[in-house]
Length: 428
View 1 (cartoon, one colour):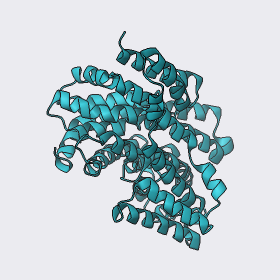
View 2 (cartoon, helix red, strand yellow; view 1 turned 90 degrees about the vertical axis):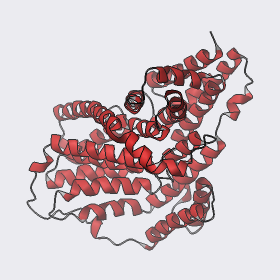
View 3 (spheres, one colour; view 1 turned 135 degrees about the vertical axis):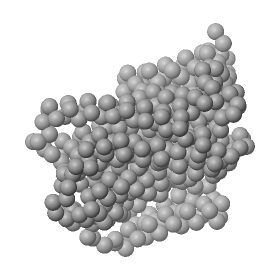
């Protein structure tokens, strides 16, 4: 058995063990990387070399900065103000939730932190005005998914890493990825609105919030927003790495006591960072042994130029049901997109990366993932005694079915326009 197959088997084993035992896959991946190198005769230092220090700084910097901003309550208040614009125009609420999800996520925190804002808000607003709370939460998640791939999110840091030394600029590729993912999720949002009969809901009175939307931003919240602007300025004009720029701004904000440093440091998703870096280290071993090339050849052999984007969306979507998008799907399949496009020919790699980007988020609404589980948990809190065991089971099944439908919608969108948009916005 070749070293490439052995390394792939170790990688698959890491996914299976983490899924079955429900532990951080990064820890499992790091643990398995060592015996893998020993078995194939590779120096153990390759495991350490596989830990991406650049990505570590980027993830820590971005997440720390937005832990600070979130600690001030600025993002939550902004979201409430955006939704309160609707008033009696209930048809605007799903649109505003979609836009708010994308805008707040794209401002830098990435998808995972924004779930804690969009899902509670969607459920609370849905209960108050008569929309199905599951529908509004899912539409907020759809908007959030498009925003995950702005140039300053943790998700896009992985894309930039995958594009290193490929001749493709990350900044050139990102607009096409954002457009494809956002449009596909807009289609999904419309399907959800129709499926839940949102068009039948009528306004009986002006939408009233819980008073948050009438509050003014505090001095600390304005300073926190200013910190984001400064961070963007450092990236664009001073050409400073996004992680380092975020750390600089974070340090200044903490020295000004804009937020509690110990609380914000604890809020950094260290488990997610360990997951991404740990899996990256094992994938480094897989790549060094030729495992990534082998997987690329297998997938490429099953595709044609017309079906490549659809097949990538399906592969990424199915993989996302058993593993993390940030930890496994994106680090594994983003680099493969380049090789597959070269082998097939006539396919824009950015279209394939768009399919991976959207597909990796497919399982986010499954009840067995963070987003779906959070919807059920928060509905139990908001609805209390009304959220019976029967209703909980109904929502569980709904989310499971919707996750599958979401994948079918994505595959259709990938087939219809991913290549077209990629060729327009990022011609190669």
